[in-house]
Length: 354
Image 1 (tube, helix red, strand yellow):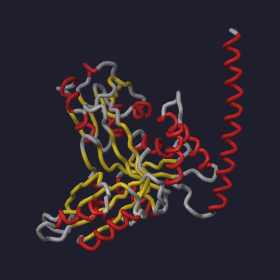
Image 2 (cartoon, rainbow, N blue to C red; image 1 turned 90 degrees about the vertical axis):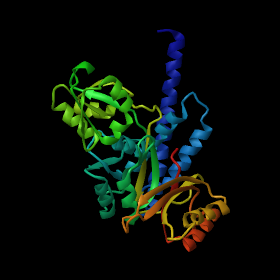
Image 3 (cartoon, helix red, strand yellow; image 1 turned 45 degrees about the horizontal axis):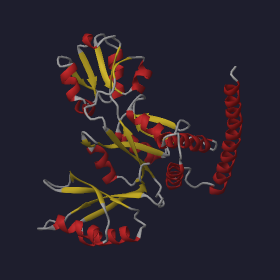
Image 4 (cartoon, rainbow, N blue to C red; image 1 turned 180 degrees about the vertical axis):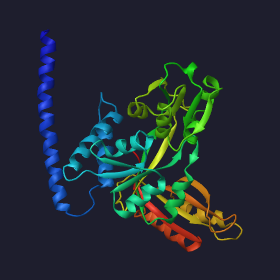
């Protein structure tokens, strides 16, 4: 063996030994913190966000910031699991992008519970069957997920965090070539995200909707000359071949998920607050709702209208703003809003996705 190569490997072995020692020291400290906290929340989203933000800022490479975030997410996941695995409900079945988002946010030491609907995710958290739930709320191409917004309005759960998952769609099949595909299954959102590619490469394939991308993969696995649009994780789960990758029309295609739970999250230093409000039935009422945000210098990052379901042509507005509801400017703006709006409900303050 080359002497230089041997020397490098010996250095790596020494570093690995030191890394193992330090990681176990960290795990032991995390255990002690867990004992001090007693029966309080297992997860502290604001603390984990601070760790990941600090690691990103201090990272000098050659590892990318995303690689460092993934590494420390897994370390924190394993440390948490020393007490008990964190249970997280998500829109199943297994092999969906929702499952991938759970792994991205909570790490592989968490225990994912697939349920058959977004309603089921809320129910699992409300009943105490899981610690948290994860639900899709919007896609950068196809827009808002209405059912999630409706449930947030009527639930007592809080938004505890957000996950931004870059969505890469694939064509999965038992067949070996695209030319053999006569039928394709997918969730309506995924069909919408891939219209251009499908029109160009599979214009004559019959399109059939499925309840989820994973369910589409299951259906495709049971048929000949059929395919599914889904993620690579579904290919592994259903033993399908990947005939095409990254077929989404927008390479930046991203789905935003919300973490829902029973706890209120403390400020992390880089937060977002979500709330829903409705305007009084008078001229200029919607304009007036925006005045407190401008007056106190609070930046609004999202405004989404949705039928209120309480009356014909009545709407509620879902708003995301920068800052935590405990911040003085945000608190003042929200207090003023409550004086002039017909209805205001704060859905939660939580760390911005790293």
